Length: 624
Image 1 (cartoon, rainbow, N blue to C red):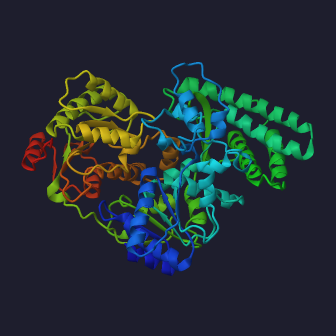
Image 2: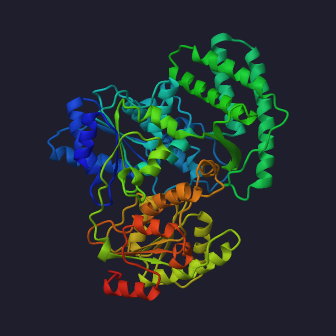
Image 3: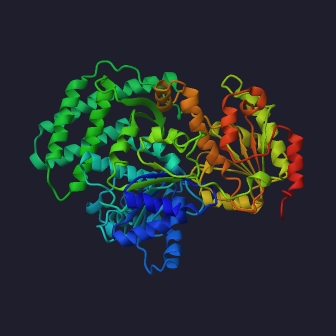
């Protein structure tokens, strides 16, 4: 893999490489990365989709660097602004009415320099509380706390001049944000002219690009965009008519969000639902867009020492223009939906075709890009066929490298159990499915005496199962992933108790629990995307066979990630259980063969007794 990456760099090509669990993927790209940086004197950018992996790479660099004889390797880890504490915001907060609120203590710790990042908080904290004190609209050069701000320091380092930094490790969101800014002609976030860009966990790149390119607007946020633009422009020209124009735009926004509130009230069943926005009447869109375009033009010609502030305002006003164009029907290259995030009506717009964006900004041949992950491929006879789904989704142009399989002995160390007795899942029979899957899950957890990670596709299913388990007399400790809690702390508790951990979201990938503490992974339901989601609805509309071309490939990427949590070392033993009878032989689904081909488990059974015999024969027992 190291040689493949070196060859791609020498030839100025891009490379796509699937690297199985346990081959030492980060070593495989850091070794050539260190040598390329040394020869070129240009920084290497590494983008990941998890903080845990970013920090692990930062540590691995030290180990590999010293082995290769590099005395110093200058590197920085850049996280999203939401991970950093903001002393300016914390200092401006008034005391909350709730005496039991954790906010006063948190504010005190931030102002006393005890907390710089969310990861510094022992025991975790809820998203709602953290959102009050994290960086959101940074004042950058104007902030009086900039000399002691971890976020400000990080942003300066990732945008260092060529020769000042060797490795810049960022999350994929930051890399994408940088690409967007450079495409729009504003100042980028990350240094110019890197020697090489490596994107790890590249199976997440499409979703990350969509998230980064999705513009979200609440009435409050849209009004703040207008107020910021007004403040900048008024300082320059003192034109009082600007205030009248802003007032007019705000009246248009009032009409828009009144309609959106009505749509959500009548259509959304829960806050996470994405609903269609009905046609909005009575708003003079063309006049509003004209006013905003004049604001945009005025901002684009300004020169000031507050360049970053002007760029941000310019970008935000252009976002508002895009929103009004989409709502009016003048722009049809965007998807649009409404939701109720954090109890506020939110309108979101997202470009339909992100592959074109990546083709022109990332895979354009200016810098070699390496995409890697343990789960990139589907079935197929040729490498082009195996990498086809990601190639199409990402607009990838470049070479396909041989897949590097996991060295672990899945053939004799593992067994996959597929339940054939649980009813098919659909909205009408959700209760029956949950009851049957719950009973089977309980039996399976008892077979391995706990030591089980249960992966859910829906939080509602996880909460239902958790409530039922709490009323049972269990022979093992029960843990559940909670909002705002530290992933490391939950995993430490789980390992200490050798119990059962109910989880969703981030636990499908990136966690590493070696040894007998984790002896079973249960996939509660196949992780198909929601068909009514606007993104998948659009992708399906472009496919000849949506199930075969969109829904199954997407499900397989996520399923491979989840099942990859089970075997993390050469000596690990374990069971993968899937409680979804659509995968049973009797269901005769076309995708059964694709799933069995994609997963490394060769011993497959639908007989519970065979599973019990395997666990007994392999000595998969709780070690006290």
